[in-house]
Length: 339
Ligand SMILES: Cc1cc2ncn([C@H]3O[C@H](COP(=O)(O)O)[C@@H](O)[C@H]3O)c2cc1C
Ligand SMILES: O=C(O)c1cccnc1
Image (cartoon, rainbow, N blue to C red; front, top):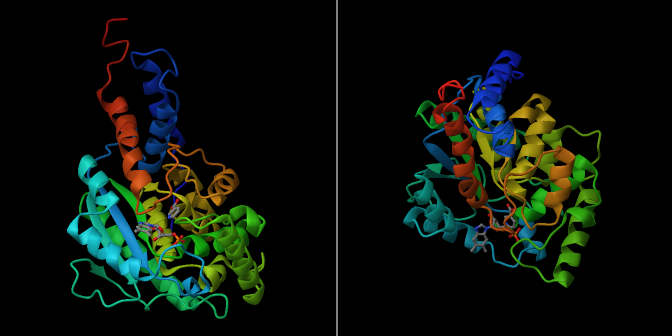
């Protein structure tokens, strides 16, 4: 896969144009930075951002058997049905921004084969990574490839921006394990309450993940694919594939919260060239997110105290990304004003 470094000439052209717009120099702050990033990603001085598509990858997690989530695993499949009916938070926010929602079953532990979604079920949930590798490296690679293919299809259908979303009870545990393993941050600093554990339950979740990382013999010399297979999630691998394919095809991918950012971390470890392409929509309440953002050295667009996932924070941030592109294309310059 080839991820191009940003084209300096395009960046210079966009910067020069921004500085000619009828406004005080730099007065649109981070929206201007975002505009330059969009120009870099698309290699277009005035990128068109339209027709957003929200790709929601869904899968279950064997680690849920250890009592690490406040909700039962059955919620994953029930929420997929809810996405189809249009009753989830992500459907509401998607309608507001005119986005299509595509749900991909890569590993839900239930028969949802009659649902009108993308069917790429690899396994019925991961194995419990306290006792066994969550999946094989081959399965992790297949999940990544599914993400790349679905992203490619949506880009070919004319969607000029992709949003990452996920559904999978237990996926904050897999995300925390990945973040601890790939950043070497202490486990207790990157394990949060997820859907709403009490502090006592969170302490137990920390113990489970610490023990699991020991049992799986995860270490910093391991390949990122191996870490992903040992303690990751199928939907997280798929999201990493979406993020990588977006970059390879010079299409922005708006990354949601903690779980999507863990997928971005996996993508970055696999392909360091993806870094300038990463746009993170918001900083989640999940405690590990702040550390992960610092590690990634990325400032998120919003801080709304969200802790939901599904792509909700990214859908909320989308109008700001669209505004950055409209600013470049629709604002008058000082020259237009006769100055
Ligand atoms: C009804 C409901 C809807 C959700 N939508 C997203 N999540 C979020 O919560 C889950 C991760 O948290 P944990 O690791 O604590 O299980 C994921 O499914 C994530 O997408 C939901 C969770 C629930 C309960
Ligand atoms: O930030 C997230 O992505 C998140 C946090 C808690 C639960 N589900 C998702």
